[in-house]
Length: 153
Image 1 (tube, helix red, strand yellow):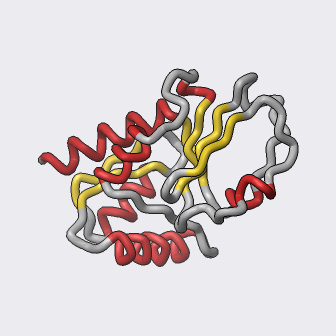
Image 2 (cartoon, rainbow, N blue to C red):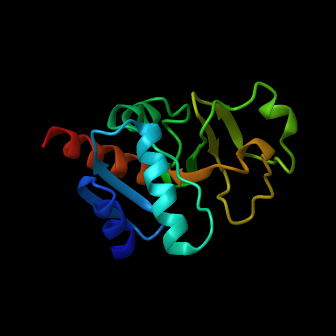
């Protein structure tokens, strides 16, 4: 994560912070989300030698993802937001396979999933989520708070 932080600093971002070792980074930038995404992807390609997908959310968008969780009473460690670049296709739920007790709902650019019995035994496959990345609600809450504080400074 130190390398990711250094990469973001080198891209000109400020107040760069990382959270847990899964590629979560919060920063401040005057660049648009599209420009920030392109900058990080370029730096990561140079660093890793191959393309690495990047998903960007503003502080307000992260707060909205948390507030829009359709399963607020469910265990936050069993509920995820799968972040996408684009809105999930209207037919997302028709393509789902291996569903047992999981509850699924579509967000603006997210797919929310509550894993009733946990993720470990789940066989759920959501083809529309293949290009996304999932974070549980505990992580979403922490990132939203970090982003809010970064925006305030």
